[in-house]
Image 1 (cartoon, rainbow, N blue to C red):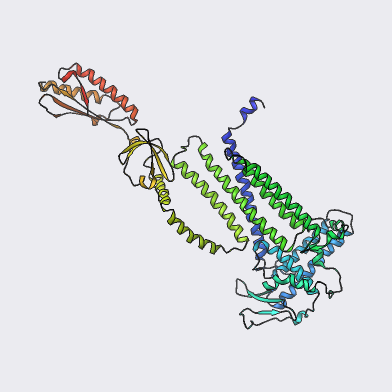
Image 2 (cartoon, one colour; image 1 turned 90 degrees about the horizontal axis):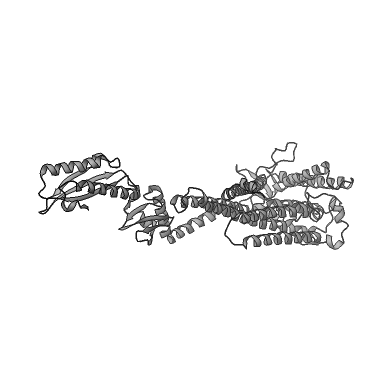
Length: 586
């Protein structure tokens, strides 16, 4: 690279700021995507409260006001969903295209919409919000297969109204001859909406295992649940089914709800992801912490993107389902939340550290300390928001956590009371600003120059060059004299005159000294006082007082020296000064 091109590069500190800005924007996008993804899932779960109906209008509410309406809605939606997906498979098998055509994609999308709508008839309140979509879809397919293999009453025989049970105030209806139960759940308006109970949803795998070998009432031999769960995901081309059917039977065998090929693909993907993430993090974080945090921030951002890709491939391509997919979603959510929180704290800590590189900033001043603290606090708040979102998605009751934090915070406040007092003292110093870094002050009999003002203590370099550290809580309560903020300095000295000097001659000398001082532009004219102070036996002592307009101590000393020499030369010419004009400083 030529010298010209190097000269065009921005300064290193500016480049760091630009990189940090880019990272903040990227993290903001990730956090927004993270929160949006959770809100979308929350929205899909909220559809269980404001559902869509299997009618011509996609906005019509799903009828759940009675067991008959809810049961009929489930049967219609689940059968339509199965029909749409089977039709998509049939259409794909009759064309030569490897990737899905527009018609196949539309059929698959319609099937997924029907499945999601059917999931609204299930009580998923006991399932972690992050896993409700997966558990809901799996439960719909299981229940659909179960109902195909048992005697189901005609829809007209399903009751419209049911009473509460003897041991419960919740109205419920049990499918005759089964343990499948529907319960009435009040909505936000107090109206009852009937759904398959949470205990029924939890036991659906058990019920399916009992009836899976029974023939279907329709005469079909297709077990759609196994066809759906043991095949590739809906985002994968349906043509992959034909390739999977050519695999040896051992690869298509069911192991704990997943096909063998799915376990192999899941294991390989997991090893690749966590191996690559571990190598990346160890190489980046294994280096010295000095220098820029940019590589670490980029590494954490890459890990977040890898986790998103890992979850998508498992769900949409490998098609892991059931408890395995629910565990993957929970694990990935926790890892993404922890990684994003660490990334936010790292970036804001780096920004706080870079405050020291801002031109003209006082690195040791209280302003810089508070700015660094504010940046770090913002980072901690954002990280806390991310972790709170994760906790909400895991189904943790945040009100209990907040209450626990309140009690723990009180105990912590009592334990760190001295630190809090010093912190508050630092805030008082920031608000009152009695001193600043570099200023000379006097407090408690100690005089020195302020070197640093932190959040806990203030450091002062004494006149004897010792370093004194004062707690902010004590420093804020002291009487502080700030010499650096004087608007001037007091000029005061005295000299002796001969006791036998005549009054007129003495008065003339006094007027000459006063005129000499008033003519100096560095002295406030109306502050000049030249007076006879006392009359000892061997001399007449005159006192000179004046207010200098020079605030800087060093400049004042130079001015005083210049004035003393000039007055000494002037008084030598008079005959009234004792000892040849020796001047004594007061």
